[in-house]
Length: 156
Image (tube, rainbow, N blue to C red; front, side):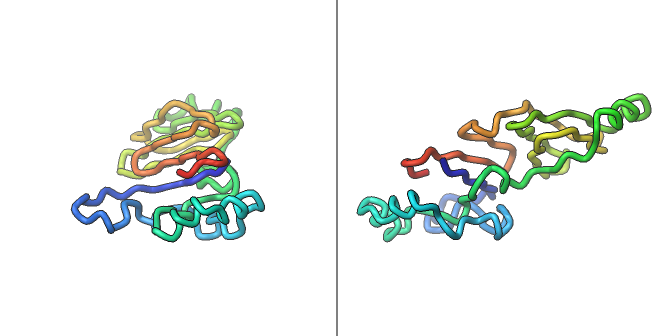
């Protein structure tokens, strides 16, 4: 399967030639796939794929190699540290994200985050956390960010 990470910016629909996604607000440049694997290379040579590419109907800038390339907030705590903090302060959000999952959240000031597997402590009274979701879920939307998984053999 292929993964695509997107970050959407609202734009008026009056000019459809204008891109709907802002490519500057996405994954770091090193995360963009530059060397497709052999199967993808073979599929790209098909007549149907060529027609779509020639007419500008495919966008590959958001494709990434693997789930490790998804921009996630890294774990920054331990269960023991969280245990000692929970007695002292109510301004810290403390949570655990299981392996193979991520947890969407927003910081209350319009910024959206995906928290990766591990133990987290976030010092923000306004943080809103959403349900933990498996990384294999086909659509994960969090505010103006999204992760879409396109199964191999399909065009997304």
